Length: 292
Image (cartoon, rainbow, N blue to C red; front, side):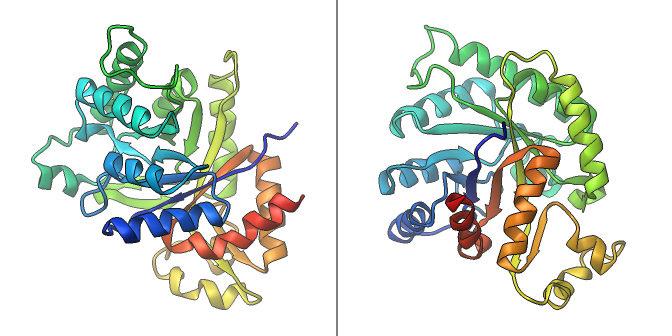
């Protein structure tokens, strides 16, 4: 049986308290299940942003999407996680990744390292967090017995780590090229990545929830025209290839709803995240899927 849909929105724009509370309440009104905060320089600091989101809302879960492990010491991160979980009454979901923007590390005066070194650091962070947060000696203590862990992954080693530890497997939908440039994955590549993940996760007692970050959402009767401004950013793909990307939802409302259902059937993506600029435009899709 297909897992029920969940929908998250990643709130990326800094705002004073009143404005931040208002947009969190709006996300709740629109039916989003999870309010998320990123971990990039120039964007809101994730943990205080989530505590403020909890103050303004009642129902949504609250998550990091995703923390750059290279910014964090595991012991200090365990303190942040436990405190935030307590202050949000056990609504926290912890998302972790390796980070992909070298310039942010340089600005912060932090080492960048090779891809392998960043994966190694993430693994150490995940394992140390599990040890610390699972210990009765940890102070402060989280409210939840286990804070759900999301890992954003694409490469083989990251998918193995995700299969071993994550409650939520977040497929990034793109590979990282030099300089932090993201190159989107076609549907056929998703088939291969999801198949590898399922193979690696075959021995799990409980299957993980599968997440996908949707990058573009446009409700329109003219998809070809609507996608034109994006083509220059993805010059190696044709218009039709861009429209067929799993991370792109462009078309009439009914067509987008059916595409979301089809992608859940094909890949298993039941938890979809959209970016803040798409929060309002994606809301009718949520409403239509809730009716089913």
